[in-house]
Length: 407
Image 1 (cartoon, rainbow, N blue to C red):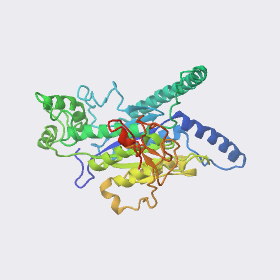
Image 2 (image 1 turned 90 degrees about the vertical axis):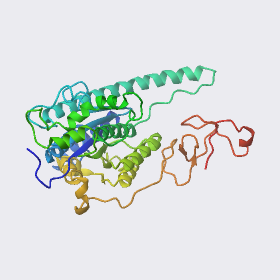
Image 3 (image 1 turned 90 degrees about the horizontal axis):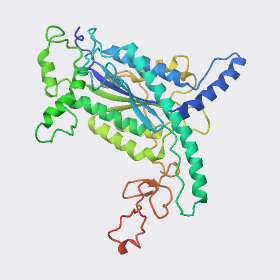
Image 4 (image 1 turned 180 degrees about the horizontal axis):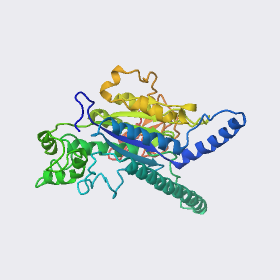
């Protein structure tokens, strides 16, 4: 059935989900201790949420989003420590983002299969968590072995640094932007790397985006059936720029911001703002006193792109309340948010973090090679890119040297 007249434009939702076992493991321990003490006093749980709570809430949100319009599309991206993967549509499975052209959607007409999404996301999360846990165990063993070897070695090499804690949310945001761009290119907008290639570049681009176009046009059923209005669809498939999906990204984050991801995260934010992609952020606080109750990076991204930021805490994370929060706050289309009473960002901390210590800084040293930010002047080389630190007094003596100035 065609959509009723006046219904909301179709949307593309790319959901980034932080499933880092290091973050959720701490929450699970705290939740167990809290629930035990509160149950003894006859009180209900007040969190923090477990990973399974967030999985159920996000899946419910995605299915509700898909129910708004049959043409809505959903992509789920998972981030576990340093690894990022597309969880739904699952690679190689039915509904694969790149293989839909060879395996068209079922005759029922819906893009989002509830059972398929639930199975794909939960299986993908389990695989990500298992690999992240295995890497963490291996890293501990390797770090201990390297530290012992380097201590007894006289060559002066530094021991290998352990991997950064927390999820690679910046990498997941970049993957989400690439997915959004694929949809936009398929609809006649976006940036294509094959657009300027001579000799068949356009044909190659059309072949690559066939799967995406099939997903976008999944409500059209063959030559003998389906809805009318084929001229609009043909124009869209030809890259005419019609009926472009309204893209948005929802980041559900549990880990604290990684200082080394600041540049990448901000670059992704600026790219999203330029492309007109709204970034919404839902940070899940752990309730642990030593940990942050919000994400300054995500706040800045939401403020820059016109999105919504929220950090539900306490009872808002458990008992199905998180599902209600996601639906009531983040479900509404961007076009109608101006007339709704939604949370607004009134106090955004725009201070960057030191790449070395993670501290918020007002005045800092900036490497002119990679733009890394340091509270204190690095010794000899930049810790991020390895550029040699040359003072302004010595810079004249080595005009050809690659140096990192500060300002």
